[in-house]
Every structure is written in structure tokens, then in C-alpha cells.
Image (cartoon, rainbow, N blue to C red; front, side, top):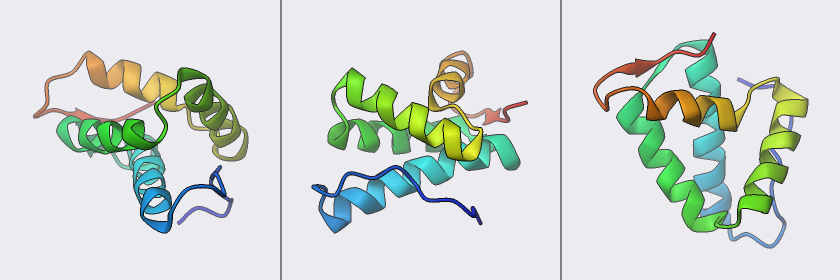
Length: 91
């Protein structure tokens, strides 16, 4: 369990917040234990339904990386190079 706050937008609904938190938790899993590529891509697609501007995604990534040390961008770049059935484990 993380001991920091996720970067969230106060204008999001509770359902949207839950989706964003699930995606950020999936990124954490990629770094900490590994996660199936298919699962993180599904979480990312749902995240992009809420955070659909690149600038907002970059801002969330910067804030998330500052508090956690984990990069959404690097994680998703690596996920793109793997097959859906593989496990993504970030270094």
C-alpha cells in the first residue's frame, strides 16, 4: 500500500476517481510485483476515457512520479513492446 496521495482532479466523479486510482495502482504493480500487459492496457484505456488530454496526462505523470518514483509514460512505453499475455515488470 502506498504512503502518498494520488494526483486527482476534484472535478472528477467518485467513479472517475476510482478508475484513475485503479490505473495508478496498476502502474505501482508493474514496478513492485509485475502485472499482465493485458490488464494494465485495459486500465490505461479506462484512464484515458477520463484523462483524454495529453497535457493533463503528462501533468498527472509528473505529479505521480514525484510522489511515487514511478513513471506512467515509461511503464506504458514498455507495455507497448510486450504481448498481451506477457507480464510487465518494470526495473
